[in-house]
Image 1 (cartoon, rainbow, N blue to C red):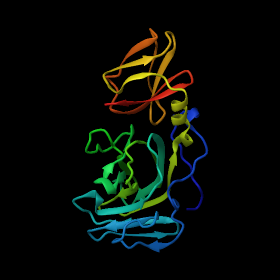
Image 2: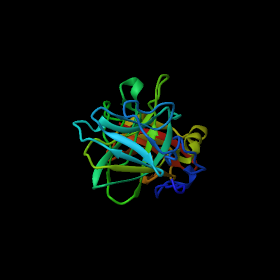
Image 3: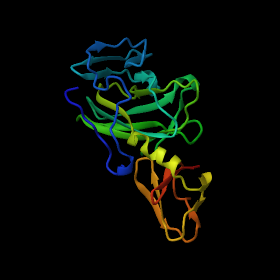
Image 4: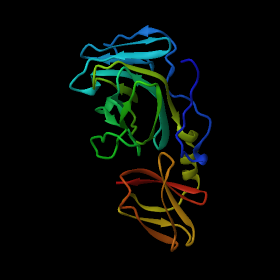
Length: 269
């Protein structure tokens, strides 16, 4: 990595920002190495895994992956295991990627200790839905031949006592060489939004909700609903102290409701 690049998506709310710490080790691939593609990630460090002959190395601060196209995208992986994440927190993933030809790659956040289930919810486009039709912390990302920084968002809420957090790039879609650099995984807002919700919460029910939601807010107050990326997706003026809101047009996922300086997490089924 030639220099530190910090990318934060436009639209992230100011009340959710703070100093960022990369939860990945060596996101800039600082040490030249040739990965043993039979081992995968070990000891909270980057590793490669392939079962069809793909190879990977780090050279001059860039991870260079030469996949063999396979029937499954996971047949070539660049991965790191053991990230220290927490439930009910939002994270921002950023990385630079390019390839010898325009192609698609996949990024996943999963738990290999519990059936490789997905552990987060994202409102980003081009996600892949998990086994429960709710968690979708897997993204299809279209990359080009030009080095470009991509940013993803996720709310984690499926960690259990024996979870092993795995972050990986899945690259066996085609045999086109992929280049990766400047990978970061940071907590969005340092937990500010979640802590605020716990300290000064509002009453929202049912939660999880589907189609109709009730919010206890003083009549005349503005009720705002944000997605996990920090974008405002709905707002209305409360007509009564307990207001009824039609949420049938909002996709399933995790949201934050805000009234004045009070916030609450909402799950929509």
